[in-house]
Length: 298
Figure 1 (spheres, rainbow, N blue to C red):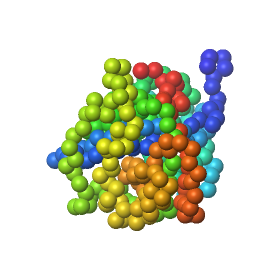
Figure 2: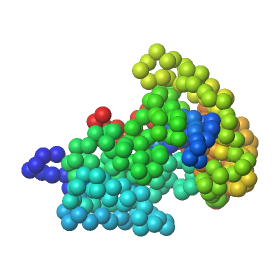
Figure 3: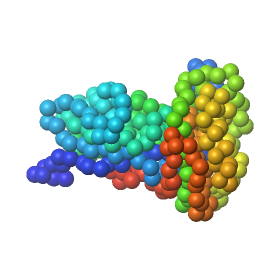
Figure 4: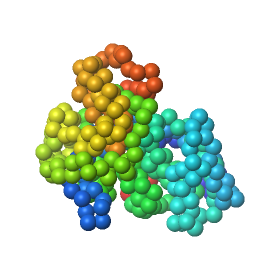
């Protein structure tokens, strides 16, 4: 980009989903926030966004796929937050191709917000660094800084403490039932287990001599679990049906995040059959880094 030829549009910009390889609730703070441990892993199932520069300062969004997104969705809120933080007087028209299911626990809305911040930082020529964008993103949602960080991560605290990790290349199947479950109801349930023993990165490491630890995927899947899953299954029995379906395929399934999507590692080529017609089922690969990692400097 030069001053003589400013960037006018960015097309087909990806916003990848994430899977929680495990999600342990290790305690609860006095303010009610839950302490957790998890591994967030990027996968190649993405929303796609298109950005066209506006010089009048206005922000608009166009839904390019059928859906019922609120007018003030996270992409619009992210753009406005970036304007407010920087005083930028430029605007944008956002086209959103929503391919990730809602209420899935895969971070779709947070990823859209992160991609919006990364793209507008470039389109508007702001030059903010990654930590600056992450601070703006944290105001929008706890998962937004992860997607801005751009690397698979060991996650602790209330979700704000991220340590970059590496994972071996692998394939996964994700199944999202039609039903959803309220995150607020899950975390507020008296049945939620809140005292899982604290783990360490070293306990899951295959080789921790690198700057970013290489984790053993099978060890994570064998020793980890999702503490939210039993409560979510009670609220949405389809979660259990998805897990039973995966077991019938010879796969070890679990829920990701606080949504109702479940996933399983595909150790080899598997022919998947018998899924309910109203489920969304997709095979995915994990990603080493976010596709927009080099759009921002540290």
